[in-house]
Structures are given as C-alpha cells and as structure tokens.
Image (cartoon, rainbow, N blue to C red; front, side, top):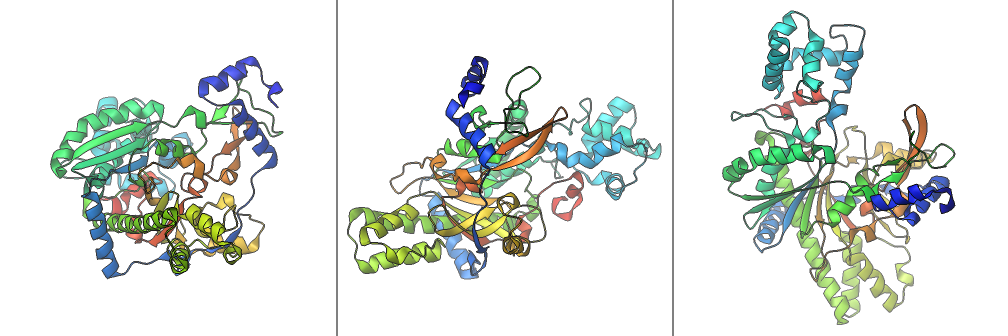
Length: 509
C-alpha cells in the first residue's frame, strides 16, 4: 500500500505526527466505507431518557455541591475553533447580489433591527471611521452594502473571519459580551471548585492570539465579579488527527504543488484534546449555546442536576467495581449489579443469561470500568442534527448513543422513521467523568468506536474529493462510555446559527 507514496510524502507524515499505518487504514476506510449502526429504538422518556422529579432535583444539586467542596478538579471544555463565516452566509450573498437594497426576508430583518445587535456601537464606530458616516446616515442614504462591508471586512469588524466565540453577542449595562465571556460566567456559576473556575477552549491556530488577548482583557473583571480565580487554558486540534483526502477513485488527492492533502478530521479529533485534560469532571458545551445573565438560571440549575446525577451514578459504579475486584460478592450482589447496569446505565444484552459466573463478572466489570457521561437532551423542535438512540454496540449489547443522520441507513424505512419521529434532540450538553475508581485517568482513545466515522464529498479548487470524518466527539468517540440521557428544558438550548438568531428574545439583554 505504501509504495504509492514518495519519500517526500513520508516526510510529510512524520512532520504531522501521522504513521504510515494510519494513512493505510484511512485509505482502506475509503474503499470499504463505514457500516451503518444497528438501531433498537429512538430513546424516549421511560425508554432510555430520564425525567428528574422535583425532590430528586434538590438531591442531585446538593450532591454536586458536596462533590465540588471535596477537593475534586472540575473543568469546562468548550469547542471554540469554528469561524463565524457561516453565521453571515446570507449577508455575504447580499454583498455578491446584483441588487443594492435588502430584498430577502433575512436581509430586511437584519437592517430593520440593526440597532438591537450587541455589536452595533462597534460597527457604527467602524462606519464613521471608514465611511465618514454613522449607521443611521448610511441607512438613510440606502448604502446598505457599505454597512455590511464594515461588519464583515478586514478593515471593519472582520466578523466574516473571526471565530464565533469572539463576536459580541449580548448587551449589558457594563458593555457587550462575547460567547467566550459568557462561558467564563457559566464556569463561575456551576463549575468552580475550591474557589477556582477552570475553562479550556479548543481553538484554531490562527485565532489563538485573539482568544488570549480577550482573556487578558476580561479575566480579572469576571474573577472579581464572581469571586473566583480563573484557570483558562487553550489547545488546538492536533495535526496528527487530520485525515487524508482522496480523489473519487480513492487514490490520494494531491495539491497543485504535489503534496498530499490532509483535512481536519472533524470535532471527533477533539477526543485527543479532552484526553489531555487532567480533571475529575468535565462539562462539554458548544461555544454558541449561551444566554444573557437574566436567562441563565435554568442552565445553571440543570448543570448542577446533571453533574449530581453523574457523581451519584459514578460513585455507585465505583462501589460495585471495588466489590467485583475484591471477589467478596454473592449471587444477590451480582443480581444487584446487573440491575444497575441495565436500569441506571440502560445497557442490556440478550445473551447475559448464557454467561458463566466468571464471564458474567468480566462482562459487568467491562461495563462499569469506563468513562461515564450524563447527556442533557431536549424535546425535538426540528433542529437539524443528532439525537439520542438505543443502538447495538460491537459486542452485541444495546446502549444509549448519540447519533447523527449520517450514521443511519437511509434505505431502512424503520430506522428513518425512528430518526424523523424521535422525541428528543442532542443539544451537546454533557457532563463527563474521566477517571477510574482508583483515580487514574482513562485513556479516552481506547473507548472510540472507529467504525462510526463517515465519508463526505467536498471539492478543492474545482476538483472533487472525498473527505474522512473521524467518529464525532459526542458520537462514536464516546461510543464505549457509560451514557445516561436526562431531559432538560428547551430554554437551556439557544444556539446561534445565523446573525439574525441574535435578535431572538433569548439573546437580547
């Protein structure tokens, strides 16, 4: 297989930290494709999804409060490498359009409500500097494209190229805030332990200096405001997680200069970044899912609840692992552990009754001795994206999994019905436990299901290519974790996909 590569290719692999075997495996994956997952059902309330009662909410919140005060390390992990360019797709189209005035509903809405955006003052200052006129004057003169150029262009606010985490999202009396700042606030409200709020952002290489600069400006202000000490760190997606691109005939795609084209492997690559985190409990949440302070209470309350559930279930799993490892158990205790694995962790295997005692203990230990996560899920409101399912694992067990549409066989009418009629949606609201009962960190890449990647069609410089996406961070990369789905209110899910989403009440100060 490797003979198709030249010495300069091997040097390129070495520079990226990618082995020849990895490249060979990727080429094989292009040729073989990926199997679709076998599904049992879409998860639903009472069948894979838990709804927490009022009394339980109090208990779980108290459990989390106790845990934070016991000296454990807690961190907030925020994937923040995405550029904001997709947020402004409609405005880029307006700049390229033959007409000069807002015509589509999106364009009309943007200009009619332009004073309501948190970035309006900075945009107005850029317009005065570059056009000699403020926004109001430019609007009266119908110079709409000048306003958009000052918003998106490099001599203006450069919002067309900035990361989403550094745009001004929300207005406050003491000045507008970026999503990055909102995550610092959230960390202080539910993820601080021992007086320290730890936040880790994964960012692109080009944007790292901008993030560092914003942290330098804002960190002390929020530390004083919330009475915490911040520990803010960053990492970049590792070049070793990039994947080879191929031509439509599955031969390696070469750039015009003859080098091989590698592309970022998607958010699943971040399992390596998460693996580098030294923390007992880690909250994972997307950069754009934030709200102003006046609406934060449900988010904070449910983060406390989800974390409390995680801690309680993890402690029970640890108790059972100690029993299994000591050998001091009887039939009743084994039955109790089976019930926990089946009911609390929703992990079932039809063949379990066929196992000999020693095999049964080994099976139970395998299901308990692994990372654990509690995933908040919201009622489905038609948002595109993944959802909670009960799916068959490689070993034949059925367990909770978050799936994307690309992982589902679209020719299977029953599976498509499950996907389209699913009652709940994945908002990326995770609380993760990364260490075993002896305090050792799990090696997270060991728990990835490598068969859950997918292949997509792309192009470069007008040439078609096929790209390989690694198993997604909360999909196949966490496939072999213990997973618990908990219903959370829709009010905790407020993503910003387009600039006009900032006009929704949930993003107005």
